[in-house]
Image (cartoon, rainbow, N blue to C red; front, top):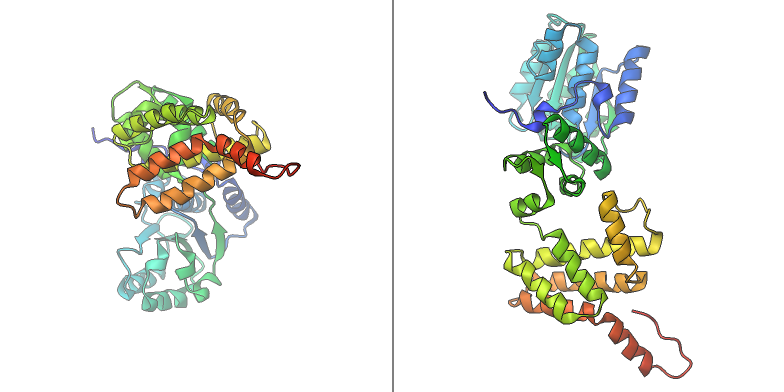
Length: 372
């Protein structure tokens, strides 16, 4: 049998299954129930946040009825719900064909629904042709325009649409959905793995499911963070933690050795610094806001571990360390010796407290030292 990727198999099928865009789903459902459905909608948002899925669900709620029709709509194959990819049909001829067919009444449903994906890719002449139909559309026609770049959609088109902005999906919501998918697939996964995948998805459910698909392709029954790190070349979580522990202890030798372990695994200098910055940010937020802060998104186990680590630092010192990482990262990108800069950074981080003490000794008596 042909394998169907997770992003397609676990696509939302109705308003109740929508993840992360509940407000949009609720508004659209209420519009149908109240008989206040507009003739045109504009769905805006980054990739993988549910725009096309929501468009199909909305079309199904408008036209659906039988299981056959519902399935055809959700697969993009229904005769009355026409999907057009504007990225590959940018010209005016495609829009003119759409306009010509719009005059005919739907074959099976109440409405003829046109879903135009990446609508911002249409040419100026195509937008002009579309505008004429959107100004006075037939009663049976509904337009759902989807775009990742609403600034490129002409104001004349936007003014004739009800606009909905789709948010990036929170990491915790993505991780929760991934856990549900793993259970459905009869596998098990470390909670930290699901949070790592959700973070890498950067608010996109589709990207997160695609990455989970890659991890599952390893054939392992137990999905772990180590599998993900090996698959996409991430710095191992525990080794980065060991670097920070050595830094907290002021042990430059141990910090350098752990850093060398990361480099020997094929992790680039830039990746190492970025991983340190991200972890230092988490520690800073815990130190400043407490271990239960919602400003960081971690599994319960990881949060407990980072809370203990954060107790070894103070917020001001962590701010200084993050600034150092940022400065060295920019320099390393253009340096002929990035490894040297990385090693110097690690030593500097490990000596932060000692250097602060030296500064204090150099100050006149009675003048308080500023902790770095």
